[in-house]
Figure 1: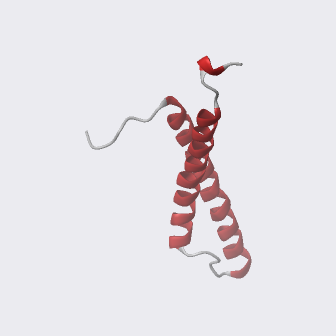
Figure 2 (figure 1 turned 90 degrees about the vertical axis):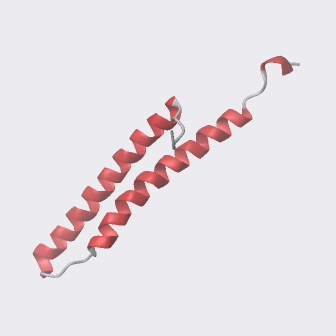
Figure 3 (figure 1 turned 60 degrees about the horizontal axis):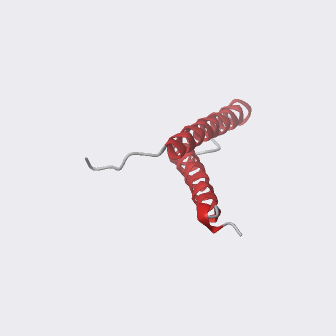
Length: 82
């Protein structure tokens, strides 16, 4: 009702973005925890960790959607062959 349905390509791009966001979380958590083990001080704030994964997921998904949209716009029309 409030949101439009995602196309197949948008759905696939969102899955890819979610995977990138998850691995971003895992990488930053690993680096932060390793830093805590060696120095007893935190390297990243919890806000940074939270927003980094979300920005990575939505950003990567958005970039993939833009790339797909540009590919669709560049496709020649079927009736315009010379």
